[in-house]
Image 1 (tube, rainbow, N blue to C red):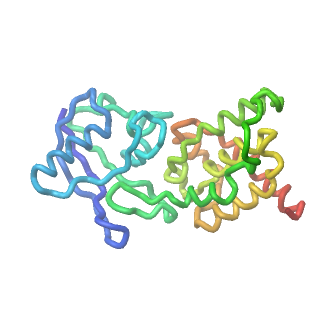
Image 2 (image 1 turned 120 degrees about the horizontal axis):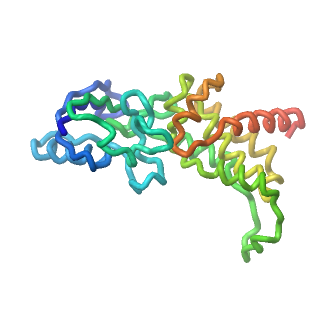
Image 3 (image 1 turned 180 degrees about the horizontal axis):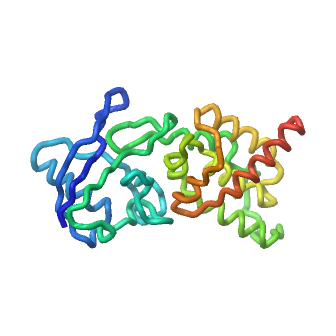
Length: 247
């Protein structure tokens, strides 16, 4: 199948970028990243600069393959990362526009690669549980309500890819931050630091320059792991409790 590609090219964070046109022949069984690999092989053979893009596992686990495909983070399929999108979902002769995630807090490094270290700093602000080192405790020592355990497990599925930020018209990181807060705060081990955690992580999120949530639900719709916006409501409640408690 022959495809027309419009790919965002930007040599570095200081330079202005633009969409460049390319033609590529792909097999319908290829993944989207394999199709980009074919394009890059052709560019290298022509002594041109290949398209820079992030990838790691290529198994839909890490979320590094962050691309906006035809205006949708990770592409047209629900609950799917870019690397798990296959070319059979496109037609011969299609024009596909490929761009990086758009957010002031995710500056472009090069082409389709963005710097998502803002997420790392949010985690460093409180996305952990302080424990004494030593022998691991018995996994069954602390009983956990089944409903809480299920909700914590669902929130923990967040892979921190940033699709929620790219999908949000305000570039909000509320879904990511709330998922990380929920999966720790719902469990007994995380309740001790729950109030300081939510305050520190929300304040760091604001410091990073992410936008505010206006309940468009675009984040949930584009999240490859289906993280629920219920986590945002829970985070807001916990944040106000922490603020009013003066912690």
